[in-house]
Image (cartoon, rainbow over all chains, first blue to last red; front, side, top):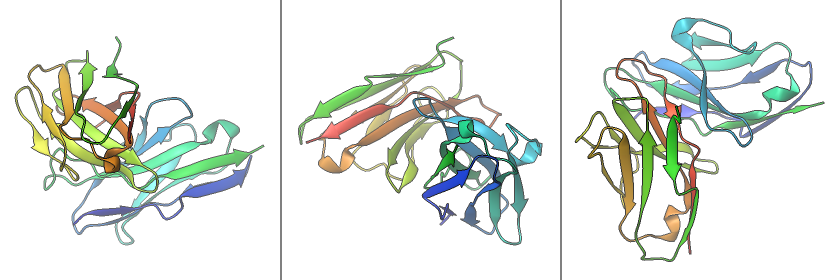
Length: 111
Length: 112
């Protein structure tokens, strides 16, 4: 069965420090990968997807097929980055329209 | 556009009671989803729908039923609520080809 692991439930970094939120998945296929974010009192929203290879709000995520990881990185954390982050792989075509979300990492950026 | 809306926002039930959660979207999206969010468990898919009149089971479907009689609405029913169903429930929708999901604000349900 597919599995998504975000090993850190809580992560605290100081403002201006680099931040890395880890995501590992277990599946032999080729997933399409997404990161979603939930800011305080806001709804869950898409942050970025690996296929677009873009940087959103300074965040980037690289798919490492060898390590089956999709870690989210930002070189200089800002206070407004404090939020809950979810990794969400989609295994196409096996699971088609189903999404599996990781357990989430709560990021706190300390001023 | 209101996007994805959920009714109600909060609800407290007693064990054995039934209720229906309503999700509505005004974006003409084909796909709709129901998730539950629990501490340490992340988001888990309960049921989903790939179009009007269709439903399918997700990862944790037991104890829940769903219906998609109209394209814009996706209902989640609890026939006999149990304390294990205490959770925050999120609805999401997405257009057919694009993978991005659009989420509702959530419904916090407590079962005593």
